[in-house]
Length: 171
Image (cartoon, rainbow, N blue to C red; front, top):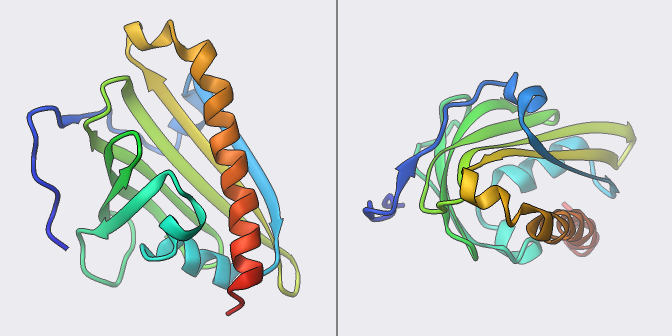
């Protein structure tokens, strides 16, 4: 797809390495036992098409890099809150996806990263741990106590919805 139009409100966030997962001031962790193999869960998380079907916050995802995907791949995710440009750090099929947001039009964020870890605990049963970490602009920290429970619920609802989607869409 075409990259989204560069708007003046689009700006760079802090570059994150995997160590940011431990250093970040804010963290949301959601987990679920999913009714699918780790490869199936990975393929659903890694493909743009299913996201809006199970995670309503995401309106669409556009890959900006041709396949094969891997570290360095970039994609745009258009959400109900704004658009983020994801830069993949880890792409290990059946195991892990991690990315940080390189640019966004959401003014509250100064850094943002997501980490999806998959562990197949039994045939067709995968434990997903979805970690979201972020930093906020000074003015945005004031509203964070109100926003945090909403964010927690958004991601908890997301893993629950993914579980239901996988049940309805077996490989």
